[in-house]
Image 1 (cartoon, helix red, strand yellow):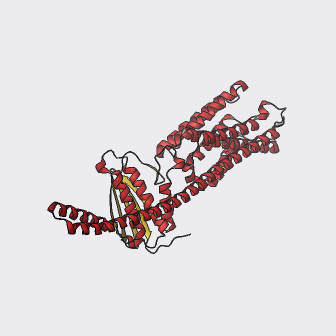
Image 2: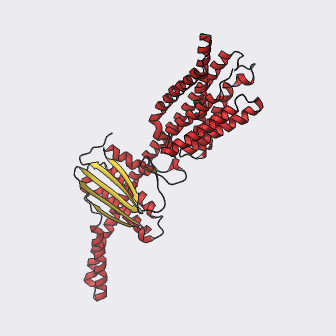
Image 3: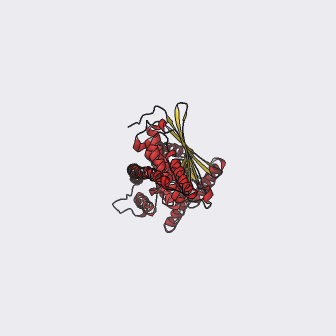
Length: 436
């Protein structure tokens, strides 16, 4: 007495839909519905046609079923191959659990009633079990939906998930292969209990492994952000010392020019000294925003930009940022300008290596805006910019650090990119205080 093939088809498809709804989707609207219906029909036809197939063809057929499920997940979600296989294992074992649980309940009700269940009653039971189990899994994992997008799945993670799924599937179906093993039985009721319990255990292990990967990712991200904040603090201290030294040299140079001017006898010499003096005055006038931390960061970044051929302009009322902790402010401005500098350095035309920073009061908020040219395509997830580097697990923390600092002060961050211009907008409440 085996579970009908079309029961598994519905259960596998439901498992795939749970995965699709818990992740960033590749298809939307009628395309999503159309592809879902197509893959459901494909699973239904194949599972019905191969129902009761000989044992020699069983494994190839199941491999093909799993391949269809991988196609389902890959076509629905913005996954690479490894991530699609990883989540397909979850969908497959979830489908196994739903089908085996529904069939176990149907068998029990049929035995206790002595009349068996009608096909209609069995189908309604299957739909009810799939809805209940899939809905429970969905609501458990829904709160972690956004974490799935940043979760990096490679060959190692995929192989571990495949191994867990393979072991769970093999043990749950052992009674159909050999009834003389320690993990099998000759009695239908025991067979169904073993299969359901093993599938439940396999699903629990897969979810535990998934949550472990998520916690590792969260801990790694927290560690990187703390390290990045510390590094920005060290950079600020170094920049402060460097700017102090430069200011001292410029101050000494002013007196040296005054001394040289007293001994200059030619118009050319006087003109050269005047030009040098004007350049010093220009340096003294720039990056004087009224906030020492902001002045230091702007001066240090300006020197870097000059060295790299980048034009950095700034219009800022730094006094409006006095409420921010110096390390937070240096990390915020440092990360924003570092991201902008990295972006404009990709421009082939040196004339387009432009960055503009503005800080101004806007009603009850301080508005910080960083604009820069960019080239190529940008990737957004949930309205947030993600790194374009190949290995995402070790990159993209600059923007995360900015968001974390802004949220710490109760502010908001928005980004916009169009017509070759990237814009980062930050709004901070005027009387904000850092939330510890």
